[in-house]
Image 1 (tube, rainbow, N blue to C red):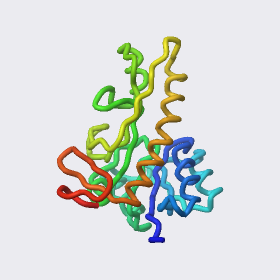
Image 2: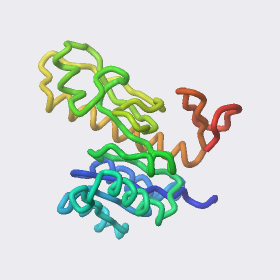
Image 3: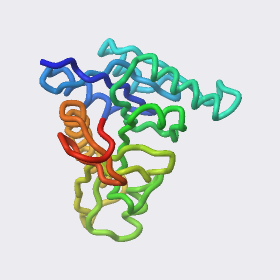
Length: 209
C-alpha cells in the first residue's frame, strides 16, 4: 500500500469533525493519517481528542502575536513543520492568511449550500430566509469568507419544526460523513482545480495536486 497522506487538522472547539477523521484514519485503507492538530486557543475538547489519540498538538493564539500578519506567519510555520499533504480546517474559527493558503491546500466546511448563506451564521440565516432545503459544503479555502472553490455538497431538508440547534445538528452529521469521504478521496486519488471547478481523481487539465 502507498504511504498514507499526512493531514494537519485545525480546530477551535469540540473537534467532532477531527474525531471523525481520526476514526477513519485508523483504517489503513483510508489512505490518510492525522499527523498534527493545531488550535487558536487552549483548553478545548478538540485538543483533548488529539492528545487521547497520541497526535501532536500546537496552539497559536492571536493575542500572543503583535499583529495578525505575525500570527498568520506563525500558524503557517507550525503547519509546515509537519509537512502535510492536506490541511483540514475542522471547525477552525479564524480566517487563514496567505502564508497558509498560498502554501498548502486547505479543505474547509460550511453548514449551508454555498454560495448561499456564507459567514458565521449559515444555519440561522437559512432558517430566517425560509428555505426548504439547506445542507453542507466542502470547499478549498481561499482568502475570502466561504468563497473558495466547491469540492462537494450534500442537501439537508429543513423540517417544519426545526430551530437552529436541531437543524445544525442534522447538518453536522451529514457534514462529518462528507468531509471524511472527500478528504480520503483527495488523498487517495488526487484532484485538479480548473478555475472554480474541483475534480477528484485522475483528470486532465487544470492544476493537479
